[in-house]
Length: 94
Image (cartoon, rainbow, N blue to C red):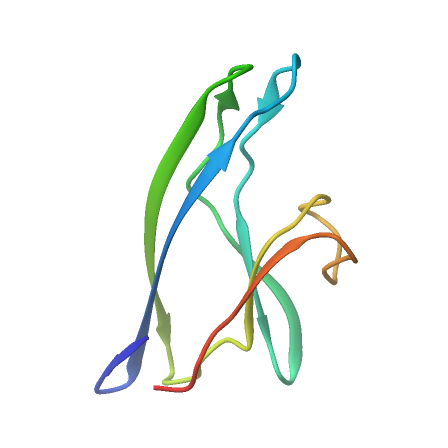
């Protein structure tokens, strides 16, 4: 997490592995704030082939100087909250 003026920049790096025999939808991320619901962070829509792994580095800017509380890789992207079992990163304060 970095702050420059009135913009907070959050960067994550992760590896998504498909250890199944099925195609997995890579999906995208959502940010969750202390005082509001999730906001979509579009950018990664594709498939992960069976037995394959993809490493991504994802960087996004949040205007207004507010830092998200969580960054989620949700199983249901259009849900208003994250669910038990979703991949979550707790975002530290800058």
